[in-house]
Length: 568
Image (tube, rainbow, N blue to C red; front, side, top):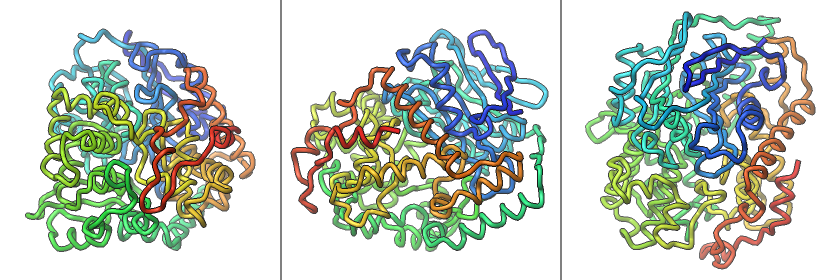
């Protein structure tokens, strides 16, 4: 039996619900999306009382399996108006598993003038305690206060001032292994949804002590060791171990898909100043708190994260990921890693998605509010987001809102969610994925770039995108880090054998993919019922009208092709 803790924030009622259904076995996105589809009315106001939030672990969470402790958070998104699953690393999923839970559901809402509260979940009880002392503080200060009160080992979730103010690009910050809330479920505006519950933080205490059980513990141990060996031997994940996701800077520059100048270009002059080697060398030279390898969760054999220090060796930001380096770096024509790190830190403290706000700043620069390449102006705009000025509120509401308010047609988003760090006219596989995701433009959903023989051609990209949509969704269904996919994308049996060794559930790869595809159908149906149509699954018209200078390419994917990539 698998358990989910249900909390009604309006009444304070809590109860444990159990189920043996397959979605409870798997957890992760499989469970969040099915709960959202069954329990959240598609036509509801995502910032209203009928929306709910779900926090779900995967089936291997809390065990010795590497990279298996991602936390999936699901709801109706205020950013896209459709279904959303956003996930994060850190220790929260582990703590939930140690409480004997597969997930937590928050339902209901409280009046907007109600005092802020903290949901505290422990072995003995679940309670809601006063959280007003956290109101208005940045995430880093909130994190320190939560750690001081509940202990460094507690799994904490919180929002920043942007979430408190219901900004559409606000995320949910989760504790890392050091007790700092720096691991973000950043996309989709879910921080604002948590705020509508008048919940400013959640704490899962480290007193659970629930040890995982196994049908065949020796087989499980052997399977866990096998996963580590596969990750260490795989050339992609081993590259990420040394350089992290920043390794993508040089790859995307070479393929002419590095977003530059509000996604007008695919090549950045001076990209070598912000690439993986430069970041690696900078961290090594500065020493101090800097780390070129860092695990966002335990255990993890990849350790692709990093700790970036300032010139004095003190912590400036952790982590800096490729997506942020692109959206807050190349997209704004910025070539100073310290600037990107400062912007990243401000975004983390304000509690906003670095992708959507980076894209919004790109729109603002195109509108003439600042020049591309102006470091101080970019930092100043991020400070406006943190200070919740009128401009800051616009930027903190994401790319689509910023473009409408500022009168910019070239708005890089799909379904209102900013395009990730791959310029779509130069990679038609990624473009197909952006257009067909039920979550808004999303790169982890169906990452095709490494497998596109001719990135600028749309031929075969419906099939390629669908192949990798399934592969990416497998990882979300299992609560696994997306980088595990490189080791198991052609054979899921090593993970399915772990399920059998732990729970006795035997599932073939075909049966597992059937569940994954059914989840995709459920997500698209929710969106259709919410009023999202084929017309919404498009880029801004400028991407179809104007060629990217470096490749000469426009978006030539038709509505029929996009629809084919969404049919399961």
